[in-house]
Picture: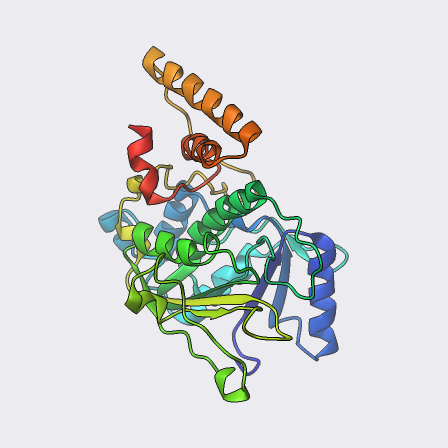
Length: 323
C-alpha cells in the first residue's frame, strides 16, 4: 500500500490489539494509516436498516429506486475510506478503537486469519486438541467468513489463512465459501516460498475438486522439516452480495449485524409448532449422547443445533437436516 489508503486491523483481545498498535508504531506506521480495533469481528456490520438510511443520504434517488443495495457498493475508493473512518469513533486511552459498525462492501482487501486449532504449530511433543475444539473452531470460522464476504467490495480480494493442518478448517472452509456465496471466486494463490526451497503442497482433492485443490497452498510440517503447518486460499469477489437473497444460508441476512451503535440486533424468532419442538428435543438427545460417546453422530447432533441458532452460519449441506 506504500503508506496510502487505510489499514484496519481487528482483534477481539484488547491486549493483542494494543500490542499490534505498538508494533506498527515501532516500524514507523502512521496513526492515520493504521487503525487498530478491539472487537468481535462477527459484529462489525451495520444492520440493514442502518445501511439503508446511510444509502439514502449518499444517493437519495438511487436508494429509493433499488432499496439502497447499489448505493454503497458503487462508491469511489476515497468515499469508502471516509466511511470507514467515520465508523471509527470510539477510541480508548490506549489508542485502540472499540465496537465499530462498518457499512458493507467498503474494503478493497480482507485478510482473514481466524482462530483455529493450531495443529500446524511445531515443535510440539504432545497434541491435546480434541475433536470438539476443531468443531467449535469451524463454527467460528464460518461466522467470520460471513462477515468478511459482506465487508469486501465487488472486485476485491479476500485471503483466508490458518496455522492448522485440519481439512475441516481449511479445504472445507473453502468449499463453504464457494457453495454459500456464488459471488466469490477461488483463484490461484501466488507462492514466493517455492523459490526459497520451502516445499508447498496443493489442497486435498478429496475435499475439493482437482482444479480447486491446485489453487490453494498447504504447508505440511511432516514434509517441511523445520517449518510449521499453514494453509492459504485466495478469493475474488465478482459481484455485490447485496443483490442476492441469502436465505439458503439458514440465517437472517442481518442476524450478526449491529444497529450502528455497537449494540447487537437480535432477529425475532417465529413461534415453534409442536412438531418442531418435538424434533428439537430429539436433536438435543442425540447431541448429548454423541458427546458422551465421542463419535461422529454427536458432531452431527451439534451441527443440527448450530444450524437452528442465529449465532452461527451453517454450511449449505445442512439444509436437508432442518426440513
